[in-house]
Length: 275
Image 1 (spheres, rainbow, N blue to C red):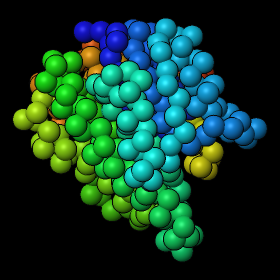
Image 2: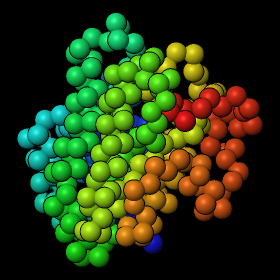
Image 3: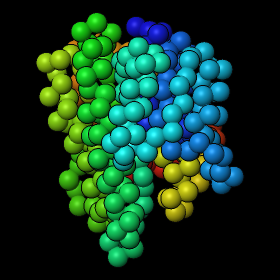
Image 4: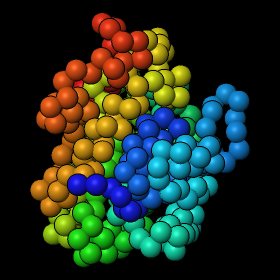
């Protein structure tokens, strides 16, 4: 199955994993809507919706860059409307946008708590809700609609809560959206799945994790290739899963993952959270 002429709405895709997924799908000739906040270059955090658009188009796709705060209902509705007007519909939603703070309760300001809940849990729910009518249209037209959320398997082990309970709740909120929406949308033929990396990934978020260096990580491209395999699967038969990137690749016959390491041959890859 190909993503040629399919339209993807990707949140937070101006850099990192979101951008890597966008570029991988663009290689098929997909239409990409980048819905992210960064429109002006920040020297400390490279990547904007405009630089992402240039990379996506260079990879072979078409791109509509939109400055969107996914906590804002009106901005989300406007972005979905603009995507439909520009490309004619939405076939795939990638819930990639996320905020992180690996801090304990005393060290987590309520403003940061609200940010994580607003972007991660509420943002995922809001954007999914806004895209749902268009995903239903895609299903009716036989265009294999998917929702893919970058969130971990649900694991109630207290060790994943105690060090950073606010972040865990916010991230698991995304996973609960996957759990519920997969079953809710199943009769409509819309797939809903989660994808999470086995190891730390070399992105801007790495700055928030003390002691983890790029040489301990894999590149975002491993998530992009795994996402592509999920998004090109049959939506009616592939839903409700909490996929891990290397398992998706192994199922497709890809077992040599050395090329995805920031430092090929590294034996010090750090496992990601929640696994």
